Figure 1 (cartoon, one colour):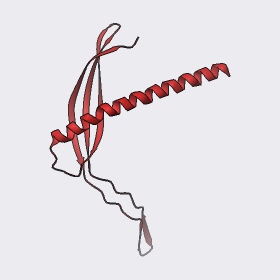
Figure 2: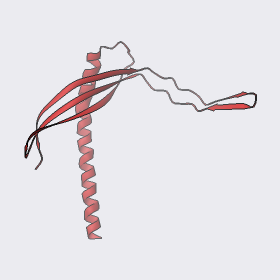
Figure 3: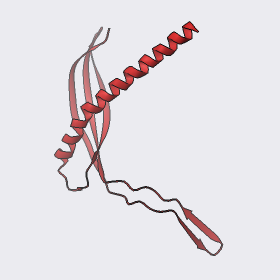
Figure 4: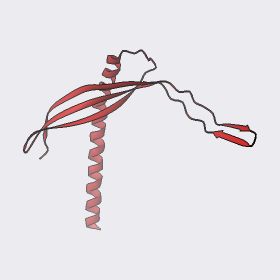
Length: 123
């Protein structure tokens, strides 16, 4: 029996801004007998990392239980002064989509494990 989810609480946690980083090229610098080689790195856009805490209440065989977990979404946004409520809302809208994708991938993993088990028994 699968426990029935009876409630979800989406609490806002933290919002962190990461500035844009420009790409850099490989470089080599020699000073006397010392040569320093620096590997280039790709650039990345500015973004916000928004962490939500979710509280999920479920009815199990022996009563009601709660699970808690954190999920961080990444919102591309160049504006360091964007209102946090706007950034949080954007991340919250992405959260449901991401959780559905996780559910699909979990179902695929379980199906693959069942197939491997069936093939092992047959072979």
